[in-house]
Image 1 (cartoon, rainbow, N blue to C red):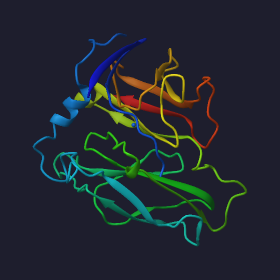
Image 2 (tube, helix red, strand yellow):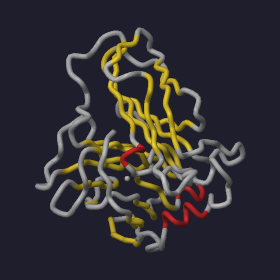
Image 3 (tube, rainbow, N blue to C red):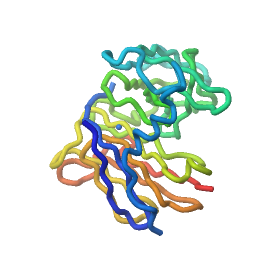
Image 4 (cartoon, rainbow, N blue to C red):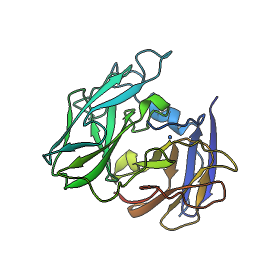
Length: 266
C-alpha cells in the first residue's frame, strides 16, 4: 500500500511516498504537493529494459547483496581496497546516453557514496591507514535504495594496522546517509531525493525515528522508513542534516548517526 504525505518546511515542500518499514544490517515556498513522487521517478525508467529499470529480476524474491572481500576484520597491506561483492536478483547496467541504470552505492566510512554499475569488483583508492567500514546497498536508477534486509552489506577492515577504536559498532542501531549529494541542475533540481538506510532497528511512533532539517530550518521527523522528495529548494547551496534518534528523542550514539551534506542546485 502506498500513500503520499506532504509536510511544510520553511522554504521547502516535502513530498514523500511512504513504504513499509524494515530493519536490518547486514530507506521560498514551492509549487505545492506532488502526488506519487517516487512513482513518477520510477515511471521514467519503466521501459528502459533489464538493468536500467530499477526492477528485480524476479518480483517474488528479494534483491540481495553480499561483500566477499575484504573479509570482516581483515588487515590489508595496500591502500587500494578491492571490493568483491555478489548481487542476486538484480541486474546492473548503465545507459551510456543518460548515465542512469541499476547500480550499487558503495560508501567508505561516511564519505559520499560512489555508484557502481556492473558486477566487476569495485576499488577504493588512497584509503588511509587504520580501521574503516564499507557499507553498500543496491540502488534504483533514480538513486532510491532497496530497503529489504538482504540488500544491505557492511564490513569492517584495516589498512596497515587497526585503529585504537572502531568507528562503527555494526550490532547497534545505525543510520547510513545516501542522498542528496553533489550538484543538481535542470529537471533534477526540481525535486531532490532524500534517502537513507536504517540498520538494527525499526522506525516507529514512540520508538526509533529519523530527524532531518534543511538549511538549519525547522526539523521534520520520520517514523516510517521511506524516501522523501524535497521541492522548492531554490538555486544555490543548501545543507541537509540527517540523524537517528531513540524513543525519547535523544541522538543514538554510534558511528555516523548524524550527518550533514552540502548540495548545490544550479
